[in-house]
Image (tube, rainbow, N blue to C red; front, side, top):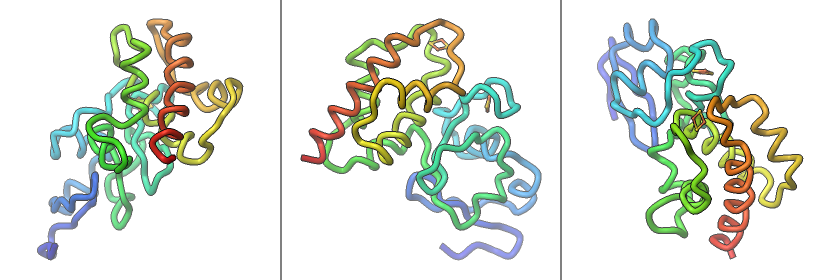
Length: 168
Ligand code: FES
Ligand code: FES
């Protein structure tokens, strides 16, 4: 997509979006996703890079969108929660990680779930068969104030099985 000189494009969930350069230069990635692109999967929690609620994938790596300047993702592939289903082409509907969270009812208020799910996707794409300790390590920087940790752990381990089945 050709963008006018005062605009730049960012690719989110496989789709190019053209935004004013002034917006990209002054806003965080989280602000642009939620306020300009209406992608509300990533949540605003601490705004300081400390809780994980805003996690997205940038070129497949988990990243905290609240502390990334929007301009910093130019030329990179951003995936949000909304883009997960297209990341696992062998399943219809929900991504296996999303399905596992539903199956295990791994939510209370749900505010942390975006971050938990995105971290789990990043982990399972790197390591399809993690043990419990590896899952704990990966999620240790993501806060859940409701104490849903047991169910979340179960969901990620179940997601690993579903993802392996989807690849088989
Ligand atoms: S809102 Fe980004 S880490 Fe807390
Ligand atoms: S389910 Fe409420 S913060 Fe995790």
